[in-house]
Image 1 (spheres, one colour):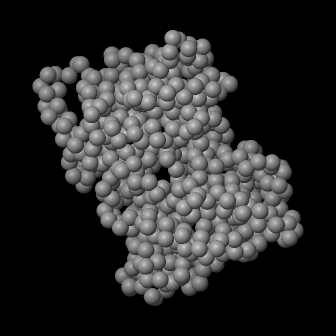
Image 2 (cartoon, helix red, strand yellow):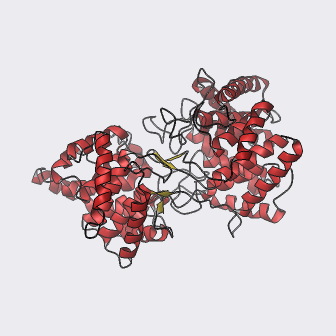
Image 3 (tube, one colour):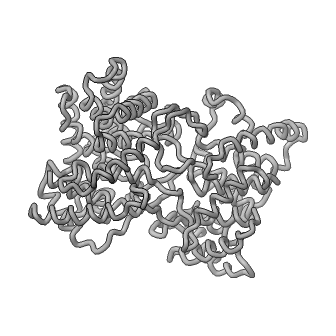
Length: 593
């Protein structure tokens, strides 16, 4: 493709991306409707018996009936393959909320699909299947099973098969969680408390003395839960988590608690016009920083100075400057959305740091914000040199396990900060950043596959054999490393190590390109706009032929349809409307450099 054509296409895409800004001057995006969220929400609304709940339940119920897959199951998004967990939750919601048996035919189809997967409605069969799927992570499996019990899909006799959640231990200081080997992290405290109390009150085979002893802790645990409710009412802005907690507390006779009242209000506000609920309110901070970085040094200057100022102030205002009340995170980080239920994490924080570098005007406020973000990242870094998502941890759960794409993102943020400020920062911070860079580089070397790939944690591909997405992970890390190599003041030894990793990763991506020019999650998997664009970003300075073939494929696509490559908490698939806009814009821009 000729330079003039690339330039023209870049202008078109940049214009489309900017047109997706909201009226406040940043990007909000739109997450796909979720069958799982919709099922949880309508059950929570029905049991809470709210004034306008009937209309909302009916709308959500109708959306579910229309969204069943041809095979009789439900996937996480309308574009997702059917899975057992979502199908069971939809089964419970439809059976619980149906009127005059109007869901009978749909329920029969779902039973047939479940049977084809070896799942019968025998309580033990269901319970064991869910627990096996989620393994050691009880933060989602136990709430799912609790909803199935609440809706009458599994009987009370099966409660003994469901692991209990020690809600009383949440009253201890956070520092003792690891001592007691709680298999949740602080973000999951709402489920631990709400669902834990529900299971406790429903069990009938405990001794009276033990029941009475645990009862003592119910009121203080609910007081703690009420103190954790964000202004929006949504825990982590997540519809499933908020819905699970609300329904369990209502079932325990705690409908008048602040948690339930605010949570039900949150659920009502999140319902879409089509009747569905998304998995989360939005990813506004994430898609905003991605968009700023996609435009980068914008060769055509599409953004006005006023727009840049608004974005800069928006991002500066979203940085947490105090200890986070929900999970105790230290100041300095950024979360994924501007709403109050968000918590800081190690993907949005480097994203915000890099976006602020793009928007940098040289003020002390900007510099301090960037450095505080870097200090927050360094504090989070695991002993293996990698970066986890939310908490420096034990490596047992996804949320405290190091991962390559986050580590590459953090590495670029730290290296760009060193390049920008050089010795113009306090010596201790500079030394800590330099040490962190060395550790992160070592982690990426150790975790690069022998074929040159990296596997991401929060993104996958439903059509690969193991549902991982080495194209996404490798493209992201290679792009980060490529940008590192372009920086000034980079240590020659580090540069050599990064260049070697980048070359191996780029060679892997070239081998994964499909014959039609596209990229999917790996070779032979159907291509998507997102994965093809990301691969081009990573190869823009390496392989013009592969990029040209990729551009040819992109040019044949007639819409900007997003694909479910995102993974939310506990393996929930989602797609985001803006991902194709963002990644395609970045791909064309990088080819103009």
